[in-house]
Length: 142
Image 1 (cartoon, rainbow, N blue to C red):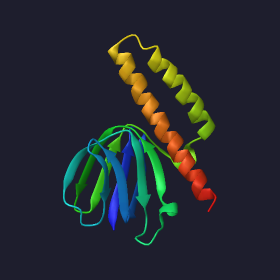
Image 2: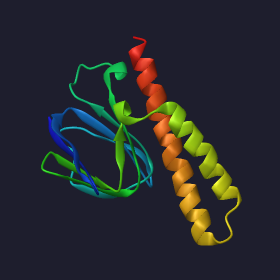
Image 3: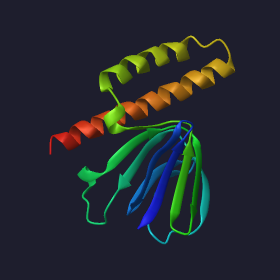
């Protein structure tokens, strides 16, 4: 098992022993399993997937929508320090879709590079939230 600590600006979001964590990075998705070599990487906006036990099927994964941060793996402890992370149970899909539409409008109406970057990040984060909410709905159907 590895210890997964998901830490946000508002505090610890998750701190438990798990079998596997899949995280979004600049180089794509990476999977962290017990015995993983030491690693420091940049977390990107996307979906974090957590498999609590080795025999858990994919439909039992726990999901978080997260934004940028840092990932560190050392001695079977994985720390993901991100600005924000929302568990699937905390996301209202309809509300996320409405916010996503507003963020797309903000992106289209951006007047400078800074506002374009902020709007783009918001669009990506809300898209991750929508994906996590949809994954939760699929799980509930099983």
